Length: 252
Image 1 (tube, rainbow, N blue to C red):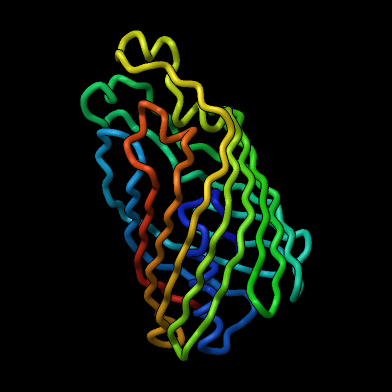
Image 2 (cartoon, rainbow, N blue to C red):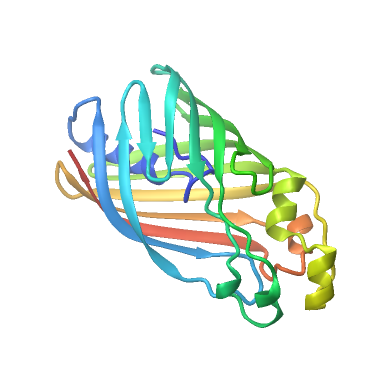
């Protein structure tokens, strides 16, 4: 089961299924549904961050997977290696309707779909991940790459997974979400800004408790440290990006 940086959080689904399938014996093809809340404290200046309802749907088989807003096909899947190609919706956007002051005059930066090639190496001391992704909706024609390590552990019905990693973002990606064009600068008074590519460290943590064989509750969080290339943007007022999700799931 995959949830790299494309979707909402890096470890939501992997943790949910890891715990749902570890506490009790289940079939190989696992379907999990549920509902929860999603809150993102984005780094944008004068921006109204808000929570939203989050449906949960996860399915994993030997050939393909669905992980909320990410879906893909396995090219290789065994006890040690997983390689897949997927497509998913990014979780970053700037909606000027949620901004105030001069920020409201900036153009909206929309979410996009990104195609990805993903690899996972599973060991007795944790899981190693690598992925590359490209914009397929012509929003920014940017690229991202991700490398991370995840340590899952479990005590009875309670389990947790902690992941740390680095994400690279191309200059086109950063220009779209954090840059200010000369035209925008003229009618907002903000300085024009043209960021280059960046590398951002992040940490994910995900916990779940299996109430019964089918029911579980989860809490996840992710913090990404913004590099100076992004923090220096006139659009940005925070040094990090925080996302928190919680909810309840049912596994068939």
